[in-house]
Image (cartoon, rainbow, N blue to C red; front, side, top):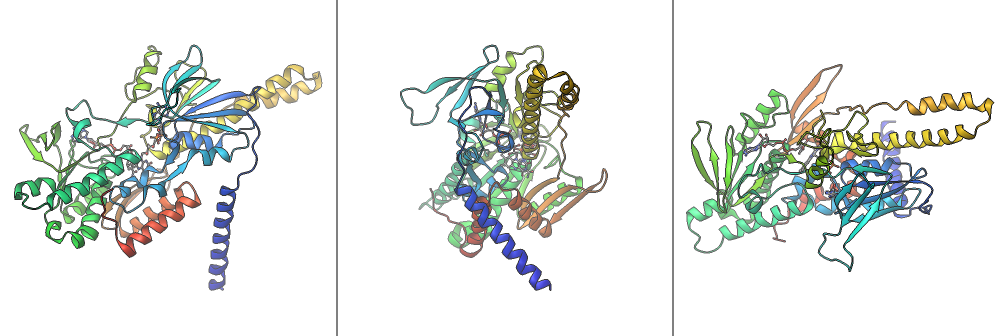
Length: 486
Ligand code: FAD
Ligand code: NAI
């Protein structure tokens, strides 16, 4: 009985997967852009904007997406790409795939929005890619603007970070880290390298003990143990990982028990954690830090990964200046409970570009995108009813009026927290999960890692991404990671 059930489940799952892949590759015909409909311009192709694009009803609107990268990136698994556990192509989904499945044609413009003019309801878009045509700057008009441009890596103006540090936010950051890591290792293996230089080149320093820094250090550790030890036996024991954190502990947003679990797991893995240590300056081969006792010290490094959180993009700072009365939070755009920009009627903002009471996470951004798509559907229904009401016969008016009141009652955004997960290395993860009314389940270990993997697999964008990531994990287990320098 159970065997049959499993068989049916497996066949059902595989058939559904095949059906989904078929549908993905064979999109239906789309309606043309309709000049009678309002135009929504969406900035960005990350968590917030893509979630909006997936759900927006294009029967009601024309939609234009503007983003300097023409794909969505599943950031939670990006640290795995820095050491080759997962291939970068497995984590991205072209925006045009998503756009092509909407009922009406969606225009995708691969460009950066460089200026927003709320007065004329227009934006300037600039092609900043390597290949430019005769025209690289253009203007687009909008009825509604959705700002989902995310944030940039924060440097706090610390000298040398931009020049010598590697961020971990985008595809090219992960590629740069992987190349630089292998370069450090090969350079350390170069003949007649002095022991001091080998020591420096093989010192991998991570600044920032938030989830990005922790997950990167964990992936790096796994790479050293699983792969480096086999292919560079003479160097493997000499590689060191150090994590520098300004606060008294790592993962400040997690439960105390999970912080202790992470710190003890790192100790077992020989990852040194320097807490209450603030980086003051980054130089080409060393960082200068302020120790807990106030003294200054230098730490030599080969590779420096900088993961100290977010700061607002120049476009966002520029827009804030246009609303001096309502936009005064430096962290990001202030919005109301309906995600409408404070001070504007027709601009909405979501995700990391905003400063709200929520943490800047993919979970929040994705829920906000979904919410905003629903809100816009309700706005369209409201507009249609208002138009119909004007021409309706007397007996119809009361019924339509009731419907209109309902359409006007738009509920504010409500965030539902699904929990926080973080990989800590050696096939272990930590998880803070909501449990019961107001409760919390804090758990860490190998079982949590299995949960971490299944949660991310089910959250990946498409069946294609899921198939590729599972293949990458199997490939890594069977063949190990590729150590070639790209
Ligand atoms: P983004 O996803 O950053 O997207 C911004 C988009 O705007 C991009 O497409 C960008 O190209 C585009 N853009 C930038 N400038 C412009 C411009 N001028 N004009 C037009 N478009 C522009 N969160 C979790 O909840 N769980 C996790 O496990 C998790 N892991 C993470 C791991 C890493 C390594 C990182 C870096 C972050 C992680 N996060 C995680 C956080 C999460 O990725 C962010 O909160 C999320 O990406 C925010 O979504 P967003 O759409 O606001 O911004
Ligand atoms: P973060 O803001 O969470 O952590 C940055 C850390 O850097 C802080 O602990 C801070 O004290 C430290 N720091 C700042 N300046 C420093 C200095 N000069 N010297 C030493 N330490 C310094 O940033 P992170 O990790 O990039 O995460 C950004 C957002 O993305 C967060 O909201 C996070 O929750 C989310 N995220 C979630 C993940 C997950 O759920 N697994 C994974 C990665 C990111």
